[in-house]
Length: 321
Image (tube, rainbow, N blue to C red; front, side):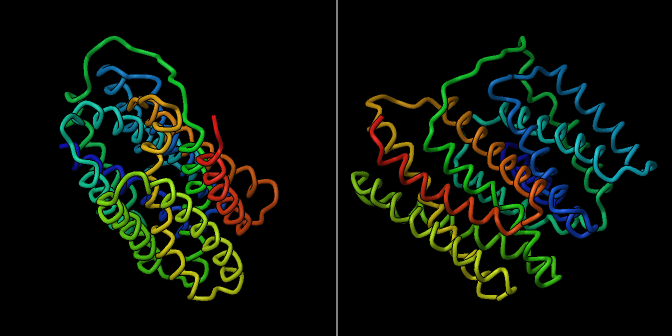
């Protein structure tokens, strides 16, 4: 069940973005939907919802879906609906996560990404199916007392996640703007994830004493690739798609961070701290992009921020303390 819900989470995250892009929404609104998803993703850590919370969330999803179907708003209701669906998905996934394998989860997420084109013309139908699946999965949410616990965060992981989420949703927008082809846009996004997934199985076979080097080289190369994408995207050059596909090779070295940071801090990093750091990086990257685009209107500038944050990840992992 965990893998099924991972695929659904991927489809919702990118599906709502693709719907917004193909319906002519502004870049700020498009990033706003990314913020909505990441807000929901943030809920299980530090706040652990109960089954009653899940039921209330699903009721809210049904009400908002009905309003979208019969109402006129194209942003507020879908924004709130995305947040509720995301939060409920994470709560259900958390209840059936034990014994799962990370690469299988990521592969299922990519399968979900690939299905995102369905949302373009069938948003309400897709979300209705998602809500039905949520109802089925509500019993997976532990029926415990509510808990609120804010763990420490890891700077390097936050910077890495900020780099990705400050530009990832915008790349979907830029690709569609350049070529007007949603299938090409989603395919490019999926390819970049396949290159990302390919890195860990190859490099993890090597001595982990090399992982810091791999991490630094990967993120420096990633930063350089992003700066080249920034130049090429101004002219809608197809070459920037190739660099986008290959950017996953640099981002894929993220798996090295935990080992390197554990050695540097001379102590273990528990999973809750890791998840919190990732989720904080997600939302901060999205909010940075939203702030920039809302104030300047210069969409391509988010790619420069992403490059700077990739270089900052190298700085952070090399810095003592």
